[in-house]
Length: 165
Image (cartoon, rainbow, N blue to C red; front, top):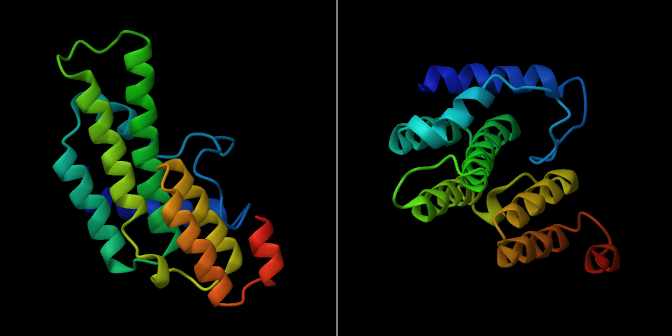
């Protein structure tokens, strides 16, 4: 993986998302096979975590609030984590420390989700809801709550509407 690969994937995301939902949920798979899918699945077997994270974070650093950069990075890490879990469940992992590998993949996903502080996201209700769903992916309820509080502070929806959610 290179930063150039990630940029191509982000460009693909821009083209694809122009055709559908504004902020596609990470766990939705109905958009077919993204160009990073096979790379993410192989990450669980032969991947270099440091290179992968370096490339994804370099793209995120260019514009931390860019949805497409965040989508690609989060979706890539989510696919890698899911692939590792499936391989473990299928008994395909022969590594001594399988649990550490699963935990490392989850930590990578959490790092990418948390790469942007709560208050620095887009002041857009749908974007914040998307970020909340990402917080739920990593089971970070405090981040989700902080995002809802941020939406309330920005008056993106009436307070009772936010509190119901």
